[in-house]
Image (tube, rainbow, N blue to C red):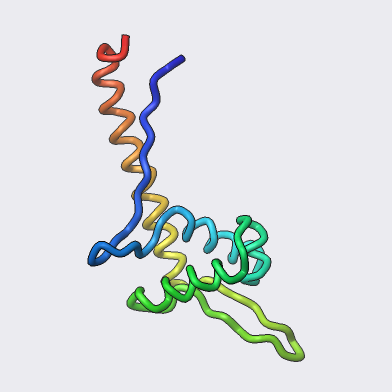
Length: 114
């Protein structure tokens, strides 16, 4: 079995979590489902937890990440803002690049594992 290197990244400010992989998965589920309740089901968390994650993101980010529209005759909905899409792209790129750096480092030192 080959040795693999694993990692997790997240954004923090003042030692408090701002955004991690779970946030990104929820944002992508919102894009797909168009609602917070649908997105929560999609990622397997409660609506309450999903709402708390989004509320935290929106309150800590410099711009709105998600826009929530309350129900009515046309129904409600949830959309990821342009800024939210930028955050998703940034996070996924940072995750990809860090994985590549770590895999390169592991490859350079593969004799340590043989």
